[in-house]
Image (spheres, rainbow over the protein chains, first blue to last red):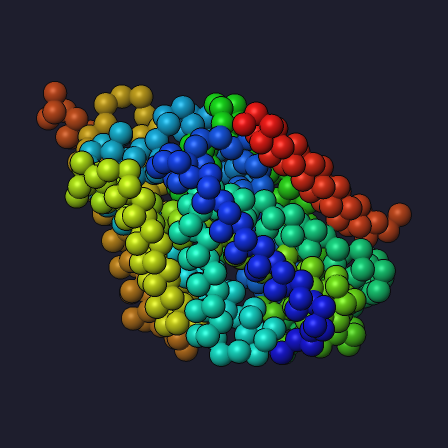
Length: 483
Length: 36
């Protein structure tokens, strides 16, 4: 447990009170379904940037774990590759998505293919946006801060989030994102200058990291400042593929739909890349400073996962520690709430309104969304109590979701000729099933609990390949028959 | 020059950029209110 003064606790409690207040008052801004789902499609550029940056960045503890364990290569796998995909999204997709004036990714799938693709897409989307990893992260942070049982902290966090998302809908999410954006940026930025002043500059890092003893008994730090660290090219490239998640990320789409005009999405994503770049450098070097200080015997770290909490506890004075911790919580919270709302929209808009009850009124859809919020959070609580590793959860959700969605979405946007509805649905099934079977086979042959994949190939590759092959074959044959 | 100087500069740039964006939020929110 971290030693935190009552002033720091006060800052954290004030933050939660603020979320409650926003949730309470923002309801006045809801005048219909368009407001509840997309804040009336009125997001201006600064608000677009704040909500995109804060929602997208949720795994701060995981990033801490990676930069502590692997060093600068964290910036390559969690920064550089992603910037390339964001640039692609900004230049080729963002404004196109805005112009369709739809609500969700399954809406696009129905536009490209048919209702069945919408249905299956909604289910994959629902799994992809499960807030489970983030609810678990918050549970771990509160457990570390307050020493409460994990399940109690998970329930408290879930209650606060349900309150303001149910009341305020997307407006509530966006308004709280603004506060969370400011807190997460400043909270993370304050630690670096203090670390440099306390421990020293690059000479300190180079000397401390060249210590041949393994940090925490298993981490070799001698290559932490090199571009690739001790990692193989294949390991690094897998992360490059994971960055393709962006192209099927419901949060990106939702914000593009909600932008005030057609130009904002592209400009907003480009501005967001600037913030992510500055932010990622801070987070990577915070992890590197933590491991270096630990190697120099200046810092006691319990585990790589909680390294940020340890370095913040050691360096930051009262007040600033509270600000940092609130920033950390805000980073995770902003993602958890957005994902919860997206999951609820899959239930109410994609399934209830567009498949099961087409004549549903706006009021009924809003009510279904509120029920959807509770279902999404309930499902996430169950998942987070049974899965204990955040990274595992991300990995499997991501692999199956990307394998299913990327190919039909990209063909939908970029293939100019006729598309077969059958190709859309079969490629989704083929991609997800292949990656699931690959994962199951890996676990069936696990060594010491670690999955061993065929030929050492990670499940994302065969999943994407199967999806692509099935799409091309079925589309070619079926389109011919349709003629 | 110690490269750590660039790190500190990065952190300061992040704070300045965040405060600038905060100014624009407030301006946007006030603008919406005054229109009403």
